[in-house]
Image (cartoon, rainbow, N blue to C red):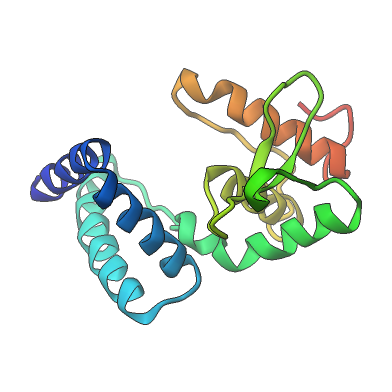
Length: 169
């Protein structure tokens, strides 16, 4: 689709242009902070994406309740606050807020040094929401195998803070 070409071109430009990359990163921070212009642009992209997704869902004869990454934006800061209040946040060089988990040398970065959030923070907010708000007793994650370590760290952090017990897996 045209949207796929748009995303591929943007990714290529992001990888090749330091200036475009910096502007993109700053706009993500603005979007996460609720900037009106960024939200309008983002909403157009979401609407176009949603139309394409609906075609696939119709072919599969399924319905999906959408909870994209942005659904969790307002849930991220309270997650960081919870980790911080329990003394589990390590503030790294530049101000990034991280959580170290057993068996991994690198941390989960709950807040980047520029104040933005990434997959680590979104996935922590998502797991807390699914466990506490949806009262999920079982959550199945299907991802590319390259994300295995990331999700093992997310699950380890959820155990570390007490959202799940040691018997959960």
